Amino acid sequence: MAASTDFNFDNWEKRSLDRKKVYAQRLAKIDKKAALKKLPRLHEQAFEKVDCLSCARCCKNYSPRFKMPDIKRISKVLGMKETEMITTYLYMDEEGIMW
Ligand code: SF4
Image (cartoon, rainbow, N blue to C red; front, top):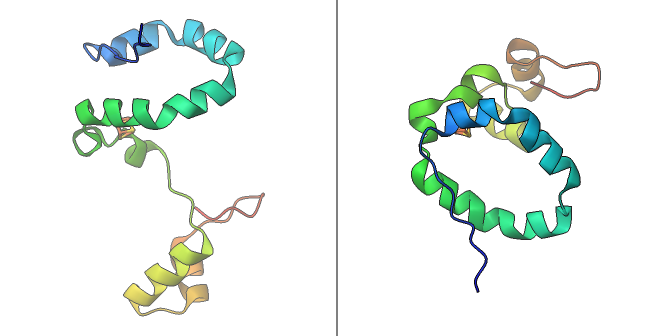
């Protein structure tokens, strides 16, 4: 018998919120190696049905982290020096992570 990884996407946002505590408990017990192995397939399944561009909650609520390759690329496109781009557009937190 094949393991089922099919997921019901109907009303997933409400069900997710309603079951947040249960999911957190399950995730705390999960076999991380097995979960990571299944992750690419689950990711593909999920994003065949979930359209990030129509949701955009991640972009509205979280800033991406900017690493040096990002900064170099963006600075080049903007025609700015890297330090100028950093001081103009980015925020560095107490851990040295640029947002
Ligand atoms: S934008 Fe974020 S919250 Fe919205 S569907 Fe994509 S991953 Fe999920």
